[in-house]
Image 1 (cartoon, rainbow, N blue to C red):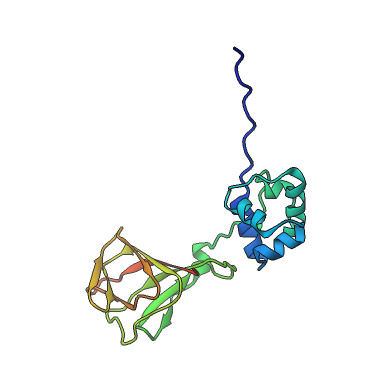
Image 2: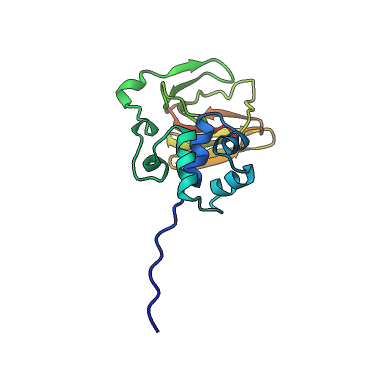
Length: 190
């Protein structure tokens, strides 16, 4: 009995195709039309259920405006990596409502489609207005103690604690005590 030949590794480009398509505000159907395949085929590629042929990879790269090397992960487009240096963040801006919080946008000057990130400095008052928004929210406490106040209860978070919840849930933030509190706040679009 002869040993089986090792199979070449499968090309997993689905997440990259989806990200590039969304960055160009293309629908699955528009991309499918651009590469002359059925939209179900593009959907299966994006979900990793189908490995595209070399010809399809070539057409995908052209339609998405990237090289084949970039599409298959052999090269990196340095514009995909965005760094905001601490020195460029400046001083916290202040938002009057829903409470007197300070915040610094972390993705300063960068266009990010799927999420936004901030360092937030909650005030002692949760304010009068409850925040509600689309997508998801995640808060990771960096310093101090923070109450996340919901309609029927609150969660007290200390350094290293993390909370995640749907943005449609009415909520407010309040610092506990006099010590300055600071948290990483991430909002997703969907």
